[in-house]
Amino acid sequence: MKLDGAKNEVDKLHMIMLFIFIAVFVWSIINPKDLFTWFLEVLPAIIGLVTILLTYNRFRLTNLAYILILIHSIILIIGGHYTYAEMPIFNWLRDTFHLSRNYYDRLGHFVQGFIPAIIIREILLRKSPLRQGKLLNFLTISVCLAISASYELLEWWVAKATGTAAEAFLGTQGDVWDTQWDMFLALIGSICSLLTLSSIHNFFLQGLCSKRGR
Image 1 (spheres, rainbow, N blue to C red):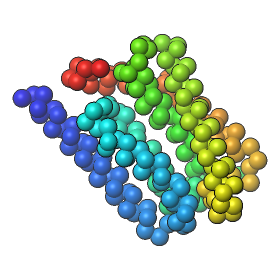
Image 2 (image 1 turned 90 degrees about the vertical axis):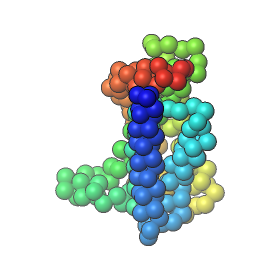
Image 3 (image 1 turned 120 degrees about the vertical axis):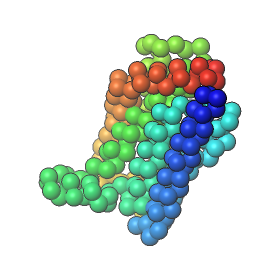
Image 4 (image 1 turned 90 degrees about the horizontal axis):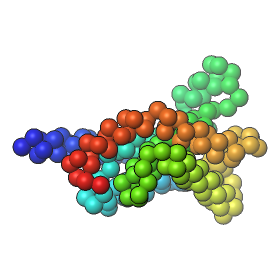
C-alpha cells in the first residue's frame, strides 16, 4: 500500500510538471517576438518532451532529472518568446548595472551544461558498467561539451541556410567570441552540476533503483 501511495504521489508530481510545461508553452506562442526564432528556440524542449513521453514507461528518470528538465525547458521557451537578446528582466539588469549585453543567453548556455550533466550521469550509471568516479565525471563532461558544440554547429547551419532570418537565433549581440563563450559556459555548467548535485542525485537514484531496479 505504501508503494502504491508513493507511486501515485510521483505520478501526480509528473502531471503537475507536464501541466506547467504546457502552460508556459501556450503562453510563449502568444505574440512571440519572432515566430521563426520561437520555433528554433523551443524545438529542443519539444523534442525533450516527446522523448520523455515515449520512454516514460520503459525508462523512467529520477524526479530530480525531470525537475531539471522542466527548468531547462522553461528557460528555452522564455528565450523563444522574447529571443535571448531581448529577455526583459535581463534587459533591465543590463541597463541598471551598465552591462555590455543581455546575459540571458549566457545563462541559457550555462544551463545547457548544468542540466544535461545530471541526465547523462543518470543514463551512464543505470545503463552502462560505469560506477561513480573520475571516468564517469570525465565522460559526462565530455558529452555535455559535445552537445554544446553540436548546438553551435546547428546554429551555424541554420544561419547559412536562412541568412538574416536566423540572426535572433544566433544571438551573438556583436560578440565575435560568442560561440566560444557558449561552449565554455556549458563546460563550466557541467562541472558545477557534478560538484553540487552528485550527492543529491545519488539519493534520488537510490530511491528509484530500490523500487524499479537498474
